Amino acid sequence: MGEITFVRHGQANSSATDEASYDRLSDLGHKQARWLGKYLSTHEEGFDLVLSGTLTRHLETAEGMGFKPHRTDPRLNELDYFNLSDALEKARGVPRPQGDGFADHMPQVMEAWHAAEIQGDESFSSFEARVVSVLLEAQLPGKRVLCVTSGGVIGMVMRRLLDLDPTRMAHILLPIFNTSLHRVAVRADGALLSGFNATPHLDTSDRLYAKTHF
Image (cartoon, rainbow, N blue to C red; front, side, top):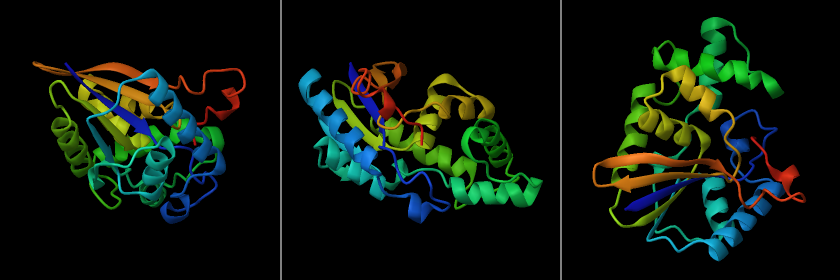
């Protein structure tokens, strides 16, 4: 049996209002990546293949973990949240939220995007197709594959594995921690979810402050 481990990037520039300025790790994000890399090196076997999205926060996370990706793949890049939220405001008059408002906002974004009421750089169907394609290619029997990516991609993987509608996909996407681990077991008859949102490298009393969502 093989395994795919999806890792969400470390904390990025959470005060940003656009993708370009968001796309870099904070000081805490660099720490999270180093802690995760040390945990994996001391508690797990190595990986046969390491994949990373092409965004700066993906590459900085992989580097901080101590991995040089065998391949970068833009299919692991994040959904276009800033443009999608701008499109939702134009379509429905719903402004981009601050703080806890994301819990109500994200389902509205996913529902409108899925219904093709709004669109950013790509359609919902295009985003889904690219994530599913890399998920299928990473299903290598007997191999351990690491994918450094973003929360939206992980949410779409969960949609595929658990047959989630867009609202439930948004609900499962929201609690994903920075540098969390998500496991997919690869079997002869397909893939199944074997772990979600684990943060063993942060689950000590002196690091609980570092469990961040954004």
